[in-house]
Image 1: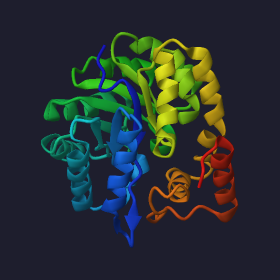
Image 2 (image 1 turned 45 degrees about the vertical axis):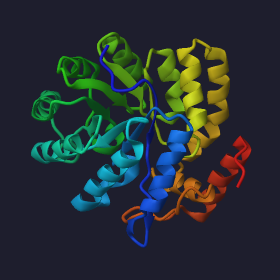
Image 3 (image 1 turned 60 degrees about the vertical axis):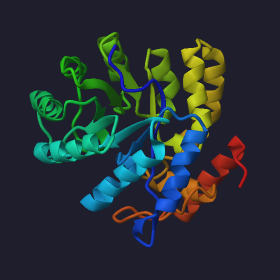
Amino acid sequence: MKYVFKGSCVALITPFKNDKVDFDSLKKLINYQLDNGTDAILVLGTTGEPSTMTVEEKHTIIDFAKNEIGSKAKLIVGTGGNNTQKVIEDSLYAKEHGADALLVVTPYYNKCTQNGLVKHYKMVAEAVKMPIIAYNVPGRTGVNILPETAVKLAEIPEICGIKEASGNINQIISISKALKEKMAVYSGDDSLNYTFMTLGSLGCISVTANVLPKEVKEVVDLCFNNNYALACEKHEKLLEVNKNLFIEVNPIPVKYAAEVMNLCGGEIRMPLTELEDKNKEVVKESLKNYGVKF
C-alpha cells in the first residue's frame, strides 16, 4: 500500500503577530508537536490560512518548518489551488525546499468534472514527481472526489493517499473499501477519527492535534494495536473538544484554544474574524472539561 505517513498529522495553525507571521510562536508550536510524538506536520493547509498569505510568507514558512523539523517528523506542505500551473509551481518550491509530501486540495470555485480532477492531479504528479495526498473537502471547495475517481487517482504513482473530509459516512466506507491495499485513506474530520481507523485508515490529519497532539495520536496508536475498546473510550472523551473546535469556521476556534493554552496568540487574518464571545466560553469550557489546565 502506498502511504506518506502512518499515525497522526497535525494541520498546523499559522501564528500571526501584528499581521506578520510570528516565527517565535511557530517554533514553539512545531516543537510542541515534536515533543508529543506527532508523526507528520502539515503547514499551509486550510488551518494554516495560506489563502491570506503572500508567496514570500509561504516560502519562508516552508523553509522555517523544514529547518525546525529536520527528520524528526514528516513535513507535508499544502500546495493546492484552482490554477493547475500555479499548483505545480508551488509544489516544485516545496519539493526543492525539503517537503516530504504535498497535500493538494481539489480545485475550488471554478471547480471541474471528475475527469478534470484526474487530469489535474496527474499533471501535478507528473510535474513534481513526489508523494502527494489528495484532499477531498467538498464543503469548502464545491468539488467531491467520488469513490470511483479515488480509485483512478490511486493509479497515479505519486498519489499516495487521500485526506477524506466529505463527512458522508457512506462515501467514507466506500472509499475505504475501494482503496484498501492501494493507498492510504486519512481521516480529515476529527470527530470521525475513530470511525476511520476501524475502516482501516492509516491515520488522521487533525485540527484538534494543534492543542491535544498526544491525545489524538493515542487514539490512532491504540487502534493500530487493536485496542479498539480503549481507543473508543479515549475518542469519546475528545468528542466535546472536537465538536467545539468547529463551532465557527476553522481555524477561528482552534486559534482561540491555542491562545487560551498559551501556545501562541489568537490573531487571525481577514476575512476570518475573532471568535464570538459566547463561543469563547464554549471552547474554554470544553478544554476545562477535558482536563486542560490554564
